[in-house]
Amino acid sequence: MQEELRNLLEDTVNDGLYRITISNPRNKDRAFKIKIRPVMVKGAVLFQETVYEGTKVFHENRERNDMIDRIEELLVCDFKQGEVEHRTCRAAVLVSKKGRITVSRKRTKDTGTGAEAAGQLRMAHNRTKRYILQEGIPVPFLVDLGVQTKEGRVVHARYDKFRQINRFLEFIEDILPTLSKERTVQIIDFGCGKSYLTFAMYYYLHELKGYEVEITGLDLKEDVIDHCNALSEKYGYAKLHFRKGDIAAYEGQGPVDMVVTLHACDTATDYALSKAVGWQAGVILSVPCCQHEVNRQIQCDKLAPVLKYGIVKERISALVTDALRAQLLEAEGYAVDILEFIDMEHTPKNLLIRAVKRQGEKETRQEQAGQGVAETTAFLHIEPTLQKLLYNRNNDKINGN
Image 1 (cartoon, helix red, strand yellow):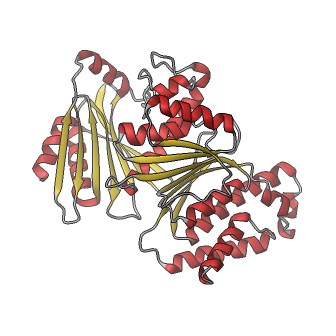
Image 2: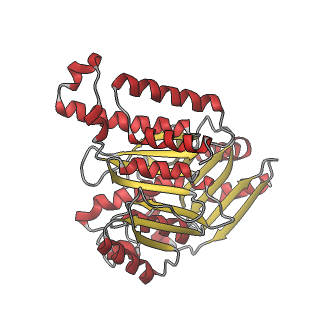
Image 3: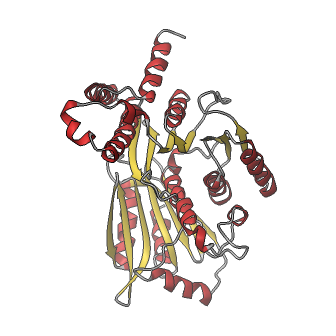
């Protein structure tokens, strides 16, 4: 009922609010997410609206009553889902296709003046960023991995890693509406390494958000795999497993909902993306690394004056590689963004490819993306591995193999 929604907003749009997240838009071509939080501006409490539209982010501050009207309008007319995090409660708002509004609210313990003081600190306009995994709250795997102390303080030398983990979880948060809560969500993490982000993903999805998930981490280093499995067992993460294996040879078991590949070197990323496409994975999150292949192949007379400089050629090749990967995924029916990701190794390899499977994809869009790849690779005299893998897979499918 709309009256319940209004009552919820009247109760929570105040200085006790942590944040409101509005997602699952009715119009997929406009903003895909909006966040609201209180801010202190010149001694007055305002509410900042952050709109995420494609790769762009817009901010606007509003007074309380104006913001309540704005949120109500957004949920009634434009979005299907809202999540409220307040000092006194957590609430979820769902809007059906027919416009029926369902509000569920769960009260939390009000910690009184201490929480109020913390809230005032959070509202400072230039305040410390409020992360998904918050400072001061110990998380077992972060403690064991040396990112936090037992008291929850972030170790100074590991603060960059803490920021990286939270940035990655923001990407996960963006795609939550695509994940089912009616069944177990299957996730593969290729090249998981020490698995900071794999543990974070399981903790966030299962422990904080209540999803039933099964995550498999794959890596070539046996000692790392053994260590991660021991930690998973220690925390009671029954459906988080780690296996030794090569990306190119991995076949998996059954359907896969999401594929994650972080810093898989050179063409290992291509094999992971090809696997994801073959499984028709609903979501792909990839942070490529060490894109050497195109750098070895690229030849173009018109670009010769630019490509003569080694470092320039290397960077252009890396960007071309990832842009073509994105277009190849578009040609396979995915909506793709290339976003900035914080790389804690302090290298320029800091782009994340996010691909979400489109529903009812138009063949024209896919054909245009495929044609664009063909023309670009011909112009640059290159043949990326992902292009070959997908071409061979599609031919096999056509031929019934």
